[in-house]
Length: 329
Image (spheres, helix red, strand yellow):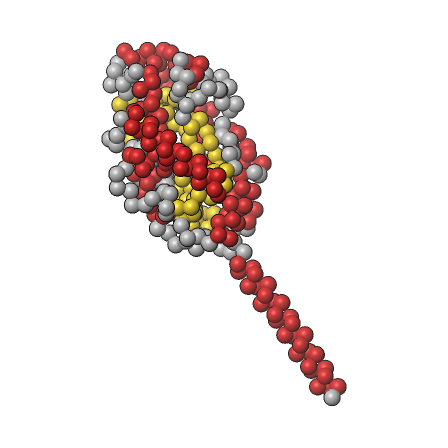
């Protein structure tokens, strides 16, 4: 009897232990992320989106213990990568880092293969930077904004500006500049800000209206020169660069922002965990230092607030496209 009682107790203990082990294992499997996560970046390396995605990915990996793998899918002004992200499996392991360009695209591209409002779920707005007018340092480095503007006006159509592609904020910023300064410059679209910057540095294009995130390092390195930042205040990262309002363009207010989306149908718990992990990554000292060096703010809008922001941006840019007459080249 004693032996049987002992065995019974052993069996009960073993069953309880197994339940605890399996219960823990099941819970662990449900914790996101349990494997590497892919983040689609719809522009090549070297552009503004990539400049924020990579340091964010490094901090995410350090904090979560799982890799955030950057997958650069450039083309069609960022819409190619957005379409790929929209069609990805909604299992929580594909994210998309989009930008202001994706709220401009619906007004510029008549046949997008995705709907930014219906096919992707906005998670968190991670960075906002002013647009900056930059020129080739060797060709125009001896000029300030007023001298450069005089050169543009004296040579209508002869100077050009590069952009990250048709329908991007770089493109619209250039069209707004033309409209408000009453000048004419030729648009040269590229497959991302990185390739456009490379040609600006090489002297193949005259200027860019770039997000400060991708230009900051080149400005500090002396490869390009900043003549103006958009808006009504100077950037703390470049306090010597005058703002548009100071230079007679009080309504020239263009910012480039970056956010993270997930494919529609991504589980709510994975969305919540992704928001929290990305927020923690953006608030690390290392990420804050990168943001500050690039003149960026961390808006920290999430979920419904970010969704409302995106909808407002779509309406705003639709009006800008209509007023400026901007078209794909």
